[in-house]
Image 1 (cartoon, rainbow, N blue to C red):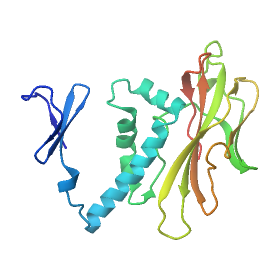
Image 2 (cartoon, rainbow, N blue to C red):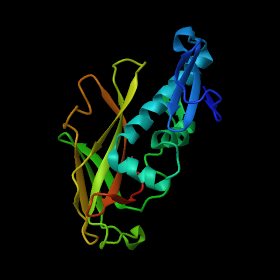
Image 3 (cartoon, rainbow, N blue to C red):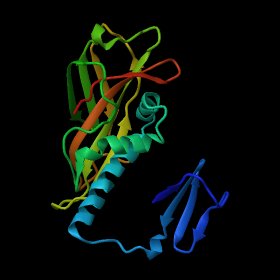
Length: 225
């Protein structure tokens, strides 16, 4: 794909010969017609497609989680899209069909939690933590609530050649109290059940997000896995 910085054709989009022209905002993109393209089937090409596909799936799910998406938009206000920012930062951590290391659910950083734990019980993911410390730098005059958000990595087959998919879930917000221990839950049975029959939960990552009175994210915790 190419980018046409100075259009000599004026405002144009569509297909010219084997070239497809698309407009996104003020930028013009040129790409070859997919009908004229033969998908390479060599080992390296398949590896790259699988790697990109897994990373793209992860970035799409993060981009669809409203609280986390807003955190990325606030952290990187000048990025082209949140999806592309998540995609580029996580790309080194994905290989063909597998994830290596810990992904970026949120940008670097996050306030510390006091002896946190994560467990799944009775179709709920439960996050527990001791009272938040002053190191969290939470301002109760602004931050009124806290909400958990989790992303799940799921093997959707029963053999050794999974397609792997990701799902995100948010829990209910609760009032923030710095003097009390935290116990937050995410219902795994709402909407599409996270772990359907024949599927296997491979990994999960969770983050706690503080909200202001208008439900706008303010701070986020370290990543829990």
